Image 1 (tube, rainbow, N blue to C red):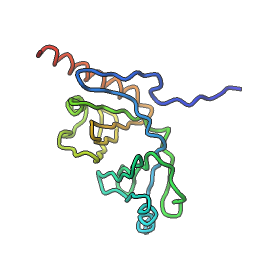
Image 2 (cartoon, rainbow, N blue to C red; image 1 turned 90 degrees about the vertical axis):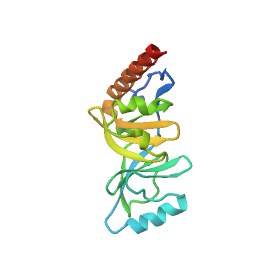
Image 3 (cartoon, rainbow, N blue to C red; image 1 turned 135 degrees about the vertical axis):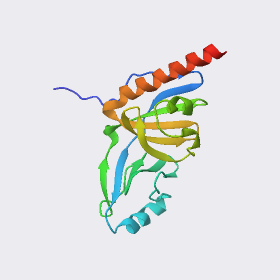
Image 4 (spheres, rainbow, N blue to C red; image 1 turned 180 degrees about the vertical axis):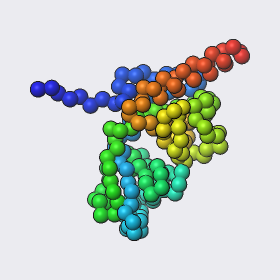
Length: 180
């Protein structure tokens, strides 16, 4: 009988570091979509409060340690880094862990690299905020973190996203080499 081996979307892909920018796969752990039922927002808030979390406002992130609740759309957030409690009475819960790939783009030029692919002003994006946008032609969730960005794309698009970002990193590094 065949034995299944769990692999990350970019299993075996080595990090890329060029001109002060690093691209690496990130394992965010469990990702659960959380969508409060109509009229249950206050009950869900009461459950989240002892955990140090609150349902995030649009483009917001609520964090308590390594656990984050990330806004992903109207009335929806992703719980990242922890399993949900017995919240089924208050919200629709869906395990999204295997459906997403996460990449970190960090370093001084991270915003410059992503600016070639993302139609947002990334320099104006504050830390601990999130945006739904596109990376080239791919839908994505973009989280601003202290040292750069976490890019979440559908698992099926992981290698394409990696290729697109790595290509821009190579172009930026070549441009910097010519200027020095």
